Length: 293
Length: 237
Image (tube, rainbow over the protein chains, first blue to last red):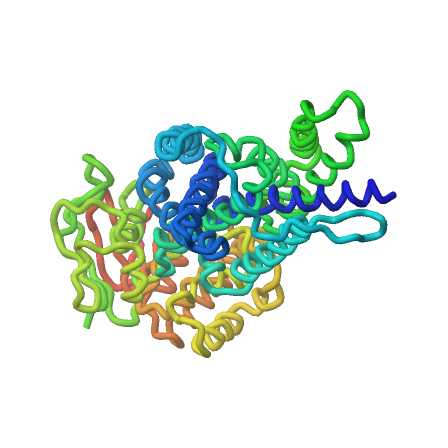
């Protein structure tokens, strides 16, 4: 029982990190209609920036906040220079550009920071607390708490603020939003900026466990994509639930089914993506596109 | 006093000209119908007024402002509201959210809620459905929503592209009656592109018939409506 609880908790913590990156994906998708395959690599760059600030003597929390600000700027620059010129050319041109950006970000990080993995300090204490016979790491609880706060803030932004409403409008019908006088290009740009900042949080959460290297976000991104697909690409809450389901499924199944082990654990999210797309293409909480003529 | 003047306007989308020396005007608060066959340049004329056209020559001015380098956002700020063909509904937003998007320039204050009430007054069904996704509305309701979204701009001029398209005659009839009331109460001028010429001529005070991008007939709507020969020659009914 204690072992199961421990696995569930560590699954929730890992799932929170997948969920955080999935939130960034959902944010870009909802505010601009693009699946950003470079979301993970952008978060990796953000993590290097956090680390650089930290190495300059900035306290860790402040370093992460500064990195979020830099990431916001990187996000809007990417939208301005790489995404906007191709947006609207063909349906998937922008998403394909992000695949190129994935490779470019990898190369740039290796060039600037080198490819050797570097350690990253944890935002939370290394201690653990006892709970029902299990030892729960404080860092795990911290990751969970950060994600809950993050999703709540994003929910408020989208559903309760005027700028969030206009972002949704700009993503779904840019022409109509423009005709209402909305600054559509600035809205799309901020969508990329905010999601890059959310990615910086995901990076800072995962970095202590995986070390910082150009390839650090690869598997995390696959899990995040699975989480977003599972929850529905247009639903922030769905992305978080998706992250948790995948995190817990992995943590509970992998040690209990012999042939999976640690090498095949990545098959769990892939199986989930496949099953969801097969059974419920819009995801658990996603909205099936409705159109009536 | 004219709210809109278009003088000898030529232009098109790339190299091919669609408008060729188009000249017409809309009086302040008036309703003007733009009639003519498919491909005559009616929709293009509406797009030109919100910045969707490459102009090669001629002038457009709105309330004294030159529209030569107008963009859609700028047109909205000047008070030109476009109800596009196909309605431009934000399908995954609710009815009320659609209207709030339309009222973006009103800010957050009471002006916004007042304007919402004005729209719900003209179209009570939208009030009933205000929490529903706009994509679930019927065609007629979506057209009402598109008109209301435009109304949220408090426009001096409303551009209406084929509002009757795909709607049942009875619904179209009621929609046009409401447009007449909106025109009077809100003092909104309207430029109406419409296939259904007889309906348009009832609502409009003036009408222009377009062919191949220029005006071939213009005058009081009632004169054109009452002259069978003109109607047969230019409107085919």
